Image (tube, rainbow, N blue to C red; front, side, top):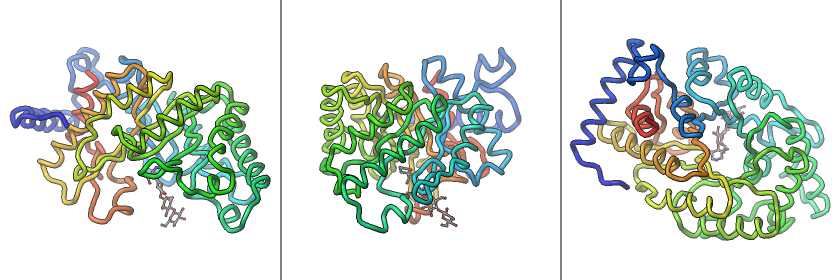
Length: 353
Ligand code: G3I
């Protein structure tokens, strides 16, 4: 983590507090904003660097109008948090339900936002018909191909990038023993990429995982695999680093170098599911450190040419997945539960300016 002086922490906190008051009062904060009379959004600022700034969202939240207003104005990219997963899109074998994904794609199109499709092949949130029985390799290959191609075809031309395979490796860099790996072997990854590419040749195809922000066994496994896939001409275009960070584990100091080594393989990279959780209650010190981390990870992406953008795993603590999954932790996002911007929001803006 970058060493931060007490003075710069204080400066950040004061700037954040002042800006929060100004935003709360409906007053623009930056010089350009003042000149144009309209606050620039994270998306506006990111676009000046040729990047996007996005957020995940989920269907149940879309009845919340104040939430939706910020989602539609502050970001130029959205990712459905659940609506495109296998359990949602193929609840019965061969019976497809695109309603949740469509709702989010339609919202994105209305707001001129890119969509990251999430996710085609994952061991979690699978329908019972798939996990509740044994499959031969021939059967599962056919099921997987049909699922991938039906979904990618349905959204053809509407998805900027797909997380084709999500969370394929264990922490030690061995393959995760998923139903797909156990039945089909590691070749399921190349197959999934090829099938997705056939269905929408223009979509960028990603592998995506968590705990791959630092250089270490897990990100090394992706590096090796990506190199092999590129050498074999498999259509792989990007590597997604989820970046579910936690204050208690320290900042991933090798993030920038890690992004760079994937870029050098000829891949795009993206921070795809960013949040920075902490033990509750949040306090000023923890929020200031969190703000630094958001600034640092934004800086890291901007420093690497092929890091194409950053997506928050929803933008507000109101809809964060963290409290339900990590007891006693939360406050992970740049907007609080009342949809008010936190120091992290202003730190991101500083990094983008
Ligand atoms: O749909 C049911 C609903 O019918 C039921 O009433 C409710 C009661 O708990 O549960 C609902 O399902 C929940 C689902 O989200 C939809 O809201 C599940 O319990 C809950 O476990 C599930 O959590 C999702 C989680 O993935 C599952 O692993 C989170 O919302 C989602 O944000 C999270 O996202 C993942 C990424 O896809 C991959 N990377 C990690 C990230 C965080 O876990």
